[in-house]
Amino acid sequence: NAGVTQTPKFQVLKTGQSMTLQCAQDMNHNSMYWYRQDPGMGLRLIYYSASEGTTDKGEVPNGYNVSRLNKREFSLRLESAAPSQTSVYFCASKYRDDNNSPLHFGNGTRLTVT
Amino acid sequence: AQKVTQVQTEISVVEKEDVTLDCVYETRDTTYYLFWYKQPPSGELVFLIRRNSFDEQNEISGRYSWNFQKSTSSFNFTITASQVVDSAVYFCALSEALFTSNGKLTFGQGTILTVHP
Image (tube, rainbow over all chains, first blue to last red; front, side, top):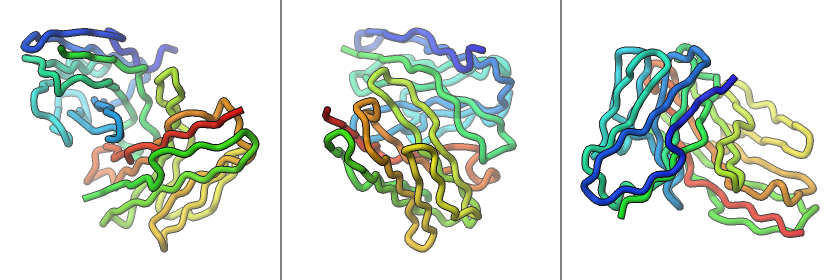
């Protein structure tokens, strides 16, 4: 059981380049989330998808777009990367209707924008 | 809006010492959920424990214990007889009621724990 799978694990971009971070889960979860982790800031929510067909902004959505492709997949796109987007990105998922259940995280994508 | 504050940014202890990581939260909901996650040097996020706002019982799991006190809005984590393998970043997190949060977690900034041999 793979859980939450993120690709790629590492990426270096130049300012202005675009890329898509991929996330897939095989746990039949309804809700999926994208977080970024920066030193001293904890994890901050970028976007989330409470259920298939819906997406909503989180705390720090500027500069990002998302697509909930199907129930399994939730991608994060950077249209024009900026150095401020250098971070570690985590995808997570959970059952929507059980708020007591924990988030299951992928292993993260370390992105550097030069 | 909800907020989670982890009191210590960094803690350094010697192996076998006990250590407590403090977490204070703010929420307007009467129904909410609290979590602790561990992030070892390898980088993955490992779920440790969850608590809902109606259950104030302390919990012990091996060397780990958690003290939840609604009166002080705190959910503290203690490691007894710490080991080098406990070295990690620990995150406290809060989720409000489902209809307001859609399952979103608000994280504290993390506490870096270093256990020296």
